[in-house]
Length: 58
Image (cartoon, rainbow, N blue to C red; front, side, top):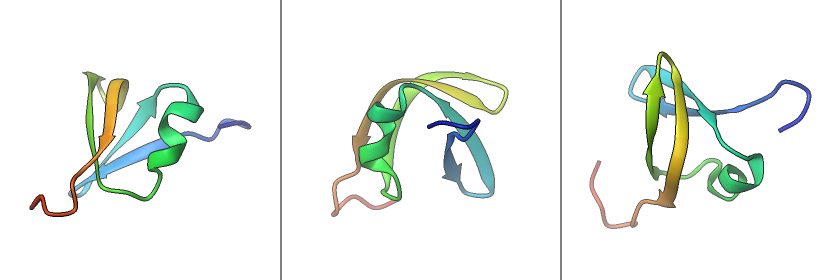
């Protein structure tokens, strides 16, 4: 994203800033996702992102 904006993953009551190319994350905005990556503080450097199957319980 531009202008200093970023994507955030909300998990329970925590928020994690997602570090990846915006075009990688944008298709998943507002969806339930599975993310793999490295966590450092409140930032996840995304290595993989995919949408959760509709029938998967969280």
